Length: 330
Image (cartoon, rainbow, N blue to C red; front, side, top):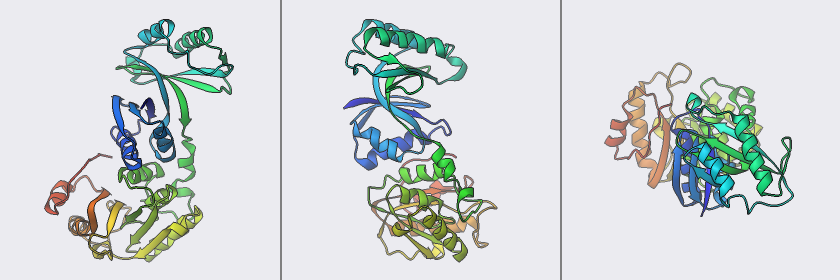
C-alpha cells in the first residue's frame, strides 16, 4: 500500500470525494483514508488506484504519490531539510515545484517563496535540475489549514475535454441535458463493475449514456419522446459509441425490463420547465418510477437518481423497501 494524494475540484462540497471512493470500490481497490479536506484527499491504497482514478474521475484535477505530510508548511520544510525524504528520487532528471493553497486567506504564505525554498532543498539533496517549462518531475505542495502535503505528480486530468463534450457542441442539443462533469460523476457513483449494463430510463439527449459508454459500459436509454431518442442516437454516434448502446421509446412508468433484471440505473429524473413529463404530476410520477426501480433492480443493484429537492424522496424510497446509501445536494 502506498500513500497517494488526489487534488479534488471544489465545484461541489461532497461529490468529489464520494466519486473517488466510488471509483475505488468499483475497481476493487482497498484503501484507508488518512486526510480528507475540501479539495484534498490523501489515502493509502494500491498504486493501480492512480490509473483507475485518472481514467474515470470527473472531479479530480491531479494526483500522485505522497512524499511527506506535516501539520503545516514550516514543519514540512524543516522535515525536508533534516529527514531522509528525497533520497530515493531518480538522478539526472529535471523538476519543478508548484504550490497549491486551499483555504483562501487562512493560508497567509507566499507561494513563490515556498516553491523556491523547497526547490533549493531538492537541488541540494538530490541530482535533480530545475526546469520550469518541461520538467520530468513535478512536485506538488498542497497547503491546507489542516496539513501540508508534498507529493510527486503522477497524472493531471485535462479539464478541457469536458468542455469539448458539453451539450451545445453535440449534434442534438436540449437545454435540460447535464454537463458532462456531473453526468460522469453520477455514473461513477453507481459503482458499476467493468462491462456492466447501465440503464437510464429518462435518457433525454443522452448525456448520461455518453459518459457511461465512454467509460466502457454498455448502455440502455429510454425516453417517452421519439425525437429525444433519435437525438440521443445522433449524439452517441457522434462520439463513436453507438455500438455499445441501445435506445427504447417508452414511458418510464411502463419500464419494459423484467423483474430483478437490472444491476445499475443512473438517471436525471424530469423536473423544471426545461424537461418534459408529458403533463404528469411529478410526485406521482416519482412514486410510480421508484416502485418500478424496486422491482427491476437485482439484489445488490444500485440506482443513482437526480430528483427535485422539493420531493420527499426519502419517504418514497422507504415505502418501496429501498435504502439510501448516500445523498448530495446539487
